[in-house]
Image (cartoon, rainbow, N blue to C red; front, side):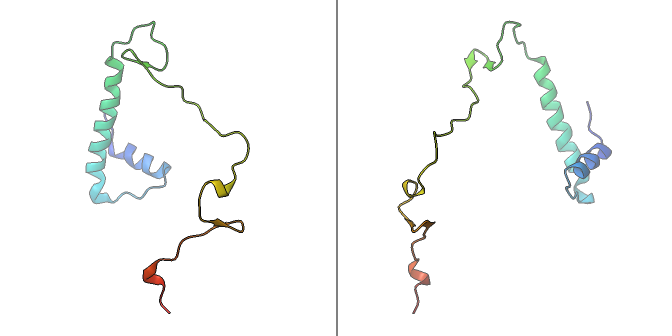
Length: 97
């Protein structure tokens, strides 16, 4: 599969990106190479018995969000928490009187 200049401009328009006309040829070549690399994935020999998340015998970890139970006390996150606010220590170079 080959990526054309028009397709690059179309993608840039969809992503609301400005493309400098002098860089269009280089960008088109780079995107064409990326699409070529992704296309090579179809040539991989993956057994029909492979489970999703398995890659070459390596089982990947589950993609789950590990959220804490309940709210976190902000004071436990930083030693610089006073009266409901995070504070920043004064820098010596800014401490001019």
